[in-house]
Amino acid sequence: MDIRGEQIGRRTKVDLGLVGDVRQTLIALKPHLHQKSDKDHLKTSLDHYKKARRELDLDAIGETGHTPIHPQYVARMVNELAADDAVFTCDVGTPTIWAARYLNMNGKRRLLGSFSHGSMANALPQAIGAQQVFPDRQVISLSGDGGFSMLMGDLVSLRQLNLPVKIVVFNNGALSFVELEMKAAGILTYGTDLIKTDFSKVAEAVGILGLRVEKPEQVKPMLAQALAHRGPALVDVVVNRQELLIPPTVNLEVIKGFTLYMIKAVLNGRGDEILDLAKTNLFR
Image (cartoon, rainbow, N blue to C red):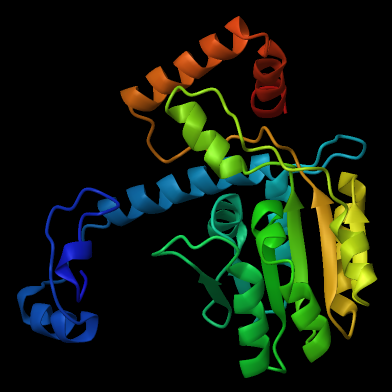
């Protein structure tokens, strides 16, 4: 159901598309609906979600001494520590995935992102705007290292305005979502490396609290420290670059593309990438 008919069916298969305002369409549909006592479909759907939730939570673990850190664990800890009415913003790419999978939206929280246009580097400027509008609410930016680097100048704006925005940087040294798209298409990754940067030092240079997290056991206490800080704060978390984002359904084209990528990687002397992929995603 969408007020813009051209949007229906863009992301998933549709059995019945309805064009119109949600409220008015539901009012028009109500006389045609009849309550059923059979709850089999509901039970199947709830069981499916519980199974998917268990599998996702098993990925979001942080074992002492096990590095690099799983980004899922970082998102899960942000969710646990954040306020019940927190406003989250997320950069496009992997931060959007982690936000969608691990942030509990309870009716009072708000999640902002560039979900239609996919504009890079949106998280920090959106967080600044949200904090200006809601000065008494906790605002957390989930930024990728690529997106944060693109509009890093806004860090100075944040300090200038002295807004208490909290920035969590998923620092994996790569444009990782682009890498995943290339791998799925059977292309050897190139042009996606980012130089190793300690963003906590950048934050400190402009007078913002900067924290660097390199071990799983540091994640929760440093996030808690940043969230308790009265002013702006940045937590730079070094996360695993080889984390795979498995979509809900995997089709033949994706399997063929990924297989082609792995063959090319081995033939081009980049077999270590395949080993890292296996260690990260198969032997957790």
